[in-house]
Image 1 (spheres, one colour):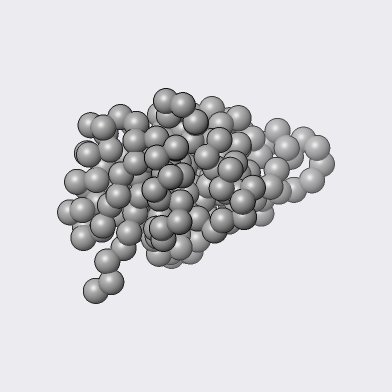
Image 2 (cartoon, helix red, strand yellow):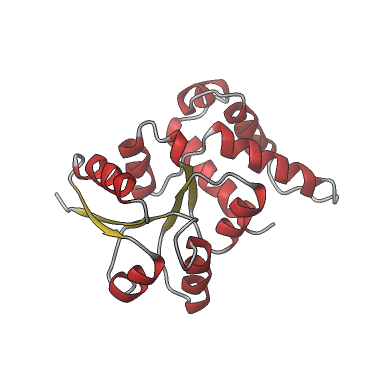
Length: 192
């Protein structure tokens, strides 16, 4: 079995070690970086299947790192892992290349969520769904439809707290279909 490689850019050592242990329990090789600068110096030229990135770092912010990587045209899969849940921060992260956004306080099933991202899907928590739905609704006021009815239904169900499995049953789709649609929703959100 091919070992997956993940980087974690996180300045809080206890949290970085906690997340690393979860990932390593799933046979995932983890490299930790304590700052954006350390990642730029030692990790930027390495291949990682996924990079978890905190927004609030000591010097260079995670968002500044995303902007730098995006400007350089580097193809890296960043998932934001932070405690910051604001519309503007989510928008900035997705616009600058993040493929997902996870709140530290919503880490249940983290290994499963990581494997989902590694396999091309995405997860969305009720909190992030709420922010996305609010942002799409405000953009919808400008008379152009950003999300399909199905995608809006996925957001509504998720915002209501339904787990992905129930959303799939309610919408008569497979769980994989829902996870792939969530990746599309993130992508559309990035282009608002």
